[in-house]
Length: 140
Image (cartoon, rainbow, N blue to C red; front, side, top):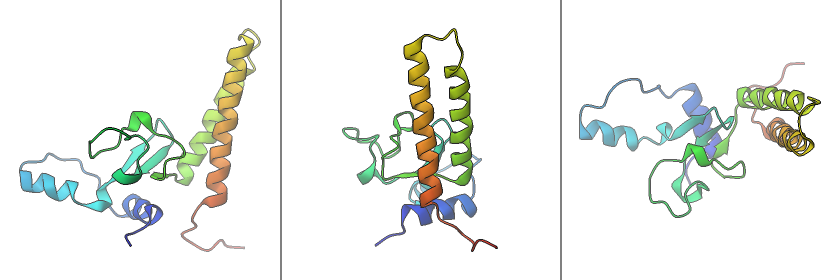
């Protein structure tokens, strides 16, 4: 059995080089696309990383492409992984939404929707805190 998505995500975040060049040959492109360490995509708009595995991707139900649709990330997807930084961003965004929801001139239904979304983001951050992988033993 292959590496877990968490191991792949940690490896990619810690060791895989960031591609910042240009592809000059088909062989080079095949090498990059065939490298499983490079199938980790950061999605800052959804506060997550996609450790892409086509067979488990919720963003692709009928599509046949071999790359994730980062505009269609689903929090329940088996490919989702979060770093502590992503969890911190979730909490920061939840605070922003709560401040917006508390604005008195905002219509009630919109305020409720913003508050619900803030609660959802806090739940995702709490789940990350509960399920997170520690790379080092905590010091007392």
